[in-house]
Image 1: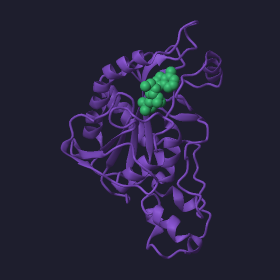
Image 2 (image 1 turned 90 degrees about the vertical axis):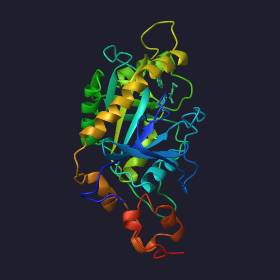
Image 3 (image 1 turned 120 degrees about the vertical axis):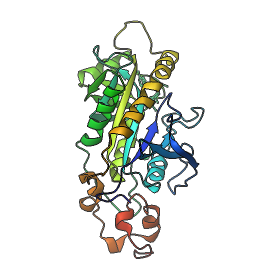
Image 4 (image 1 turned 30 degrees about the horizontal axis):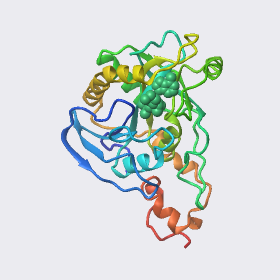
Length: 300
Ligand SMILES: CSC[C@H]1O[C@H](OP(=O)(O)O)[C@H](O)[C@@H]1O
Ligand SMILES: Nc1ncnc2[nH]cnc12
């Protein structure tokens, strides 16, 4: 597990249109199992600019998983098992603001969760209860570095923006889209929740770079969001996303200073250690591996 002074190891979750990470030195595909379910696909690990990156395509190879079917817990658990220290999520997003135009990048800093609640949103609950803080759901350090890398890669970057996560897979109604604008949201997507919640529970600093693919339906009376347009814009953006990763690899400092998120579970788990059920502890051996310690210490 990551400790202060460890090297960076960035887990990248590639969204719609980003199914492979581009040039990774010493790339290796590895199959990692999770007790929480099926990850979206195999992970690919390698180096960019001398730093380790591990990549997983959120919707799987061939985009076969809808946002409601992605096993977000398995993906985060698998990245944690690979030893990643931080997670960079890359997503296609719709714009709720005129100034966030298609092709622009948005480094999201707030989230509104409108998913239906059917997605598994916590690693805890089987006899071990944890309440992590989520007031600021993204890591400001990784977000700033991602914004700098996107800028260097030549993208138009907006630093900050509120992302509303809808269940989908259908796009929003016009009334919903107008409502989200009234709520102050800037962009819309279907995947950042529960991904960001779970990264926090796994003590992984999380940043989200959204690539605007369309104006959501608030803007043009009578017009719909069209997935073909989104995929065209995303394909054009994918090279920029890969350039961002290259710039990020080059910009990461040699040593990773500790983040407060690395130890967020210390003050979040309310169940006393000696009451943790063995089976639940075993499932959490990566997510809460820092605290699980010797397996078998808990109750049967
Ligand atoms: C293919 S358009 C809708 C789809 O794209 C976004 O996915 P991701 O965040 O993985 O890039 C959006 O959230 C929807 O899942
Ligand atoms: N308009 C939109 N609504 C929801 N998710 C999206 N992903 C890309 N564009 C989107």
